[in-house]
Length: 444
Ligand code: NAP
Image (tube, rainbow, N blue to C red; front, side):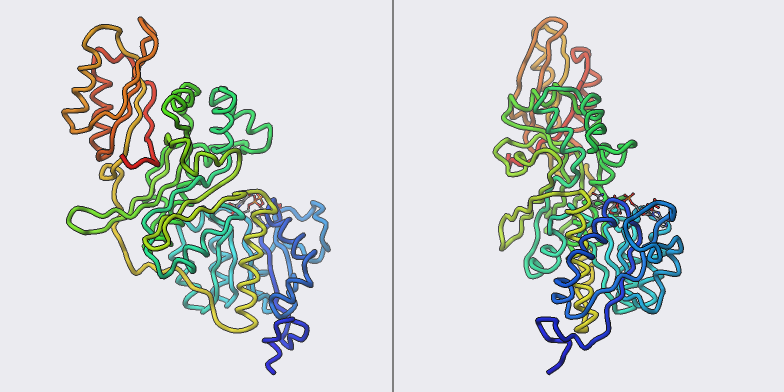
């Protein structure tokens, strides 16, 4: 009997698997804790003992609750040590994480990372280094925390054709929009409350301006469409201009507002295919599965040609939930070290071009203050009609100086929709275009 294949793991016969962790913050602390607590189970699942060789941090003076000799501020030496087989990168940021991961891969170590900002720019470089060294590069925790979505897309759906991936993948913005919807409070007040409750960072820019969601969209689109997509390919708008009035108005259309990351296969009239990756706040019908995802929760809806619609829901951030995904990857990488072989690497054979937002078919919601006089509605409708954008709904509210008009359009190229908005801004009868949002989750 080959002892390394003993499913009980009771007699692995093989040497222990050495592990290095880079970073002991929110996620790293939980990874080390669970790793320690579940050592026996992990050993049985892997088929060999896992041993922590070291943890790299910046500040060696802080008490971390682990043996002092495991801590180091020399991450460079740790990642290339001979007794390290797997490096778990949980530092975040581009540098020095990028160089450390490269050095680890080039030294034959498998790497597990949760670093979406890095992956959204450098997956290609890192995947090439992993392929050259014949080791694993896993990153389930980089998108939507605990929710398994990378592995289902990369493995379970490897035989299907993914048409669309749409999700709520940023908990901070979902918390803010849900709270605005629930309480009627405005954006600034709700952002401050999110900060007090620990849902928003001191500098919330990456979350509220959609950079974090765009990085995740780039990762999801790359996997779903077998095409290398980076954060620069993702059209991005954040939530900082969404108002309390928008959420009230959305309800009148039986909708709510969510920050969506959308990755879509676009089929042009000539049969050619392109990819659209985009992040923006959008009205979605209350009946849509993503409308019920509230607070800091995340969800991703995948539409594939044969599988149909699949939905993944759960905790998209936080130390322990994210550590769950990291440990799942760690067990996979360790099993491969014990039994031989490798997991799948990214595949980019399709090389689909990226469609600019102008070419994407969208629906618009436009809220404006208008002069309260006869003929204004006809003039506004004419601006849309001139550009072949038809109106699905018009709602007039208030009177006199407070007259407000809200229009919702049918689907049309985004370029035509944005040209309509530019024309409205030039009209005398339109005193102010106060809000422009897109609408998703409907077919019309
Ligand atoms: P964090 O709390 O800021 O922790 C970062 C850790 O990395 C700290 O322990 C820090 O050391 C260490 N570190 C930073 N730069 C270092 C350097 N140059 N050398 C050595 N150590 C260094 O970060 P986190 O929230 O755990 O996030 C870690 C990663 O997981 C990020 O890529 C993040 O995007 C991703 N992620 C996080 C979540 C979440 O909910 N937090 C969810 C999904 C993905 P000190 O302790 O000494 O400062």
